[in-house]
Length: 435
Ligand SMILES: NC(=O)c1ccc[n+]([C@@H]2O[C@H](COP(=O)([O-])OP(=O)(O)OC[C@H]3O[C@@H](n4cnc5c(N)ncnc54)[C@H](O)[C@@H]3O)[C@@H](O)[C@H]2O)c1
Image 1 (cartoon, protein in one colour):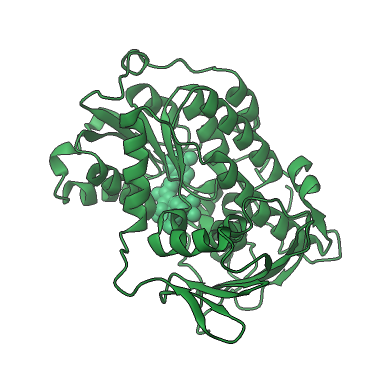
Image 2: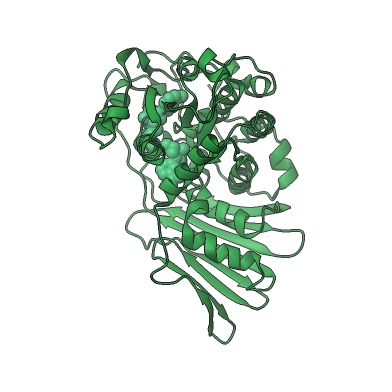
């Protein structure tokens, strides 16, 4: 790709755009009727998840047409479009060449053309993209994580408020919220089957994600964006990018209460010391403390050749529960070990990604907007405060995370963009190198 057109200044303008409608809605969107035959979709970020989300949008509603696509890289856009053109719904993939955009700010050219936008790019850009989409009056599917730092969180919360005022649907990519067994067991917990929840232990133990070694002609920005999961400024580290799913389940189980503070630790043992492996840790442990007493502990790692697990273990005053969507396992027992509840073996398990899109498009058609913004943003901030605590070695309060000045966006996207230092807790090192 050519040099990025986005600048730190445009990223910092996020909150201002979210607050004031700087972008005008297109004519067809102004007159948009939820019962209109066709819903034109714009896909921002044409990677694995974006392509999946577009396919789910097509399956959710027979009036959906994939109309415009944007990606930072031509090859990613091309392969996504190729895949969509192989689907059963290929007749509704109508992305003419003049509606294929390459660059990091191309959402600006997509928004005027569409009714609905799927935000599936690299997380660091999401607050600004969300602000623009809300200002343009679009319904939004917004992948997780929605922000990687405090400044991004505050911007997202502005956008969430504005989306509610405009009655826009804003559906999050926290897909476990759309999983039938998770909904059933957490519903049981909320209805008191466990008594009061006194503790949660969650694990997200997985393997490292792939890397792309540098190729001739790539700028530093291209190289980091190609390896975005491994760079803190782009992904928020794997706690924010991946284990945030488990953080979101903690947030869900705790009924959306904010933890007052957290204490975390983490390090980097197993990642090779090569530039494409960036500056992130490979393990975290975070203890969240709640004002009314409970604690929730999250253990996350991305290390090769180790045991993988994705469990939520919930202790209550009357019993304990085990949730594992990978196994899958969903049951509640009393302290004698007798099963009080379990998800039926023949219970429905529809594809959670499809369910979230089905309800998204139904909400648009019915004119009954869904706004999942608060939990979407709060779960991300919980993960961010965990990373802040692990990197610094200090306790971090919810209020410090909300009001912090942390902004991970580099001062420039032009070469050279140094790879950040891996933080050393307790030494007050900056979370990224500055040029
Ligand atoms: N809900 C889930 O279960 C789930 C699963 C996988 C990924 N995700 C999330 O989805 C997002 C995308 O992940 P992925 O696995 O598809 O990654 P990916 O690397 O396959 O795709 C991301 C794409 O975004 C593009 N991109 C980056 N910046 C952009 C910008 N400013 N404008 C347009 N395009 C841009 C990249 O070039 C890339 O093609 C991430 O936030 C990830 O955490 C969620």
